[in-house]
Length: 335
Length: 200
Image (cartoon, rainbow over all chains, first blue to last red; front, side, top):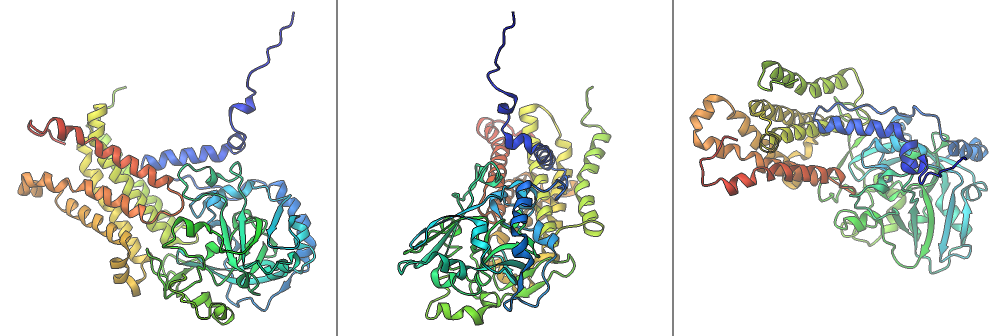
């Protein structure tokens, strides 16, 4: 007689999928952690981009192939030389994947970026849940080479590909009560290890916002690409904001929600440290961060001997285009 | 197999091991890749190494007290390696990272630099008085002076804390480790203060 015992737990239930699928990096991290704690400082160097690309990226690239093929150059681009792709991909602040600059490059590869929906809500005539490709396909993609100035006093030149946010906003037909635009990033702890951290100060989702006139400004870009290709996951794939005259943290990544509201929306860094990060966060060499100077910046990539330290420009060099947005405002009070 | 912790080979082994982080950094500097922001990467990694050595130096008393493992003969070496890596950290900061045009402004206004500098000055004083002649000359004051390593530990963690943003996992690990290491000193002060102090 055959008695079948059904096991209470299957093998797959014992270990969370995210860990066994990612076991190599788990082993690498554990090993690196142990060695670091033992003080030997022997870090196991991460095998960047060693694994095959995840299928959702290939699917998304397919969908974006024809818009990318007709990409136009933009007069808003700087003539400065863009940072090499390698540096743009390995030096990131994307706390959903960890706080180290290399963490997003190591951990974001598995993020599922297709299918991708963006919820549009609030004070608009056409709210809804849109497929990202439907938002993009009727617009002409532009390449915009912008300076990016991080609040941490480093900067890079990045060749984004995207569409002006103003064109997108026009489709949703905001009402007269839409005075601010808010944005939210993806929350998916199983693919975003930083969101699993027990000691994170950030209350996910990451949130950002702009005044409606800032959002409608022609420089404000919704990026879907970089160097003529779809965005790398660590750079905020598949869909992110780029506001070149503001500190980098305003340019929220992997956006899943755009809302139109009457009052100033809460923003992540401002809520975390209101004395250090304001809602406006315009690049301003005259207003120091309480913990460091904002007068200069390190233009990356830099060399060890001869760091590229350059003067920081008001509004990150876009003063001519955007100063009028802030006429009559005290920029040291509204940092 | 029993390890004779007091043997010369253990001493030399620890000495050689303590040089591995240095050789790694040198390799990265001259033949390898320090990444996109090399000055910052080098400075931060040397700081972390110095912090680990400080932790190991402070761990010697708890190892003896809680695990009966006496590595007291290695403490001066570990302390001097702490100072060595802290010096490289400060040197790398000055050479590869500091903004000279705003340097004094930075030191005065940026609390994390000020606190780090204070910790470094303590380590400098301890390193300078770590030799037998200075021990003899300072007599009983030597021990009082070298207890400054505890405030130095606190300053180092504050130096790190003031640069933390957003996620505090590492800061939690550092703070907890420091608390644990310092707590190893407490019971002795409480329970044995009447007796003659045992050598630390």
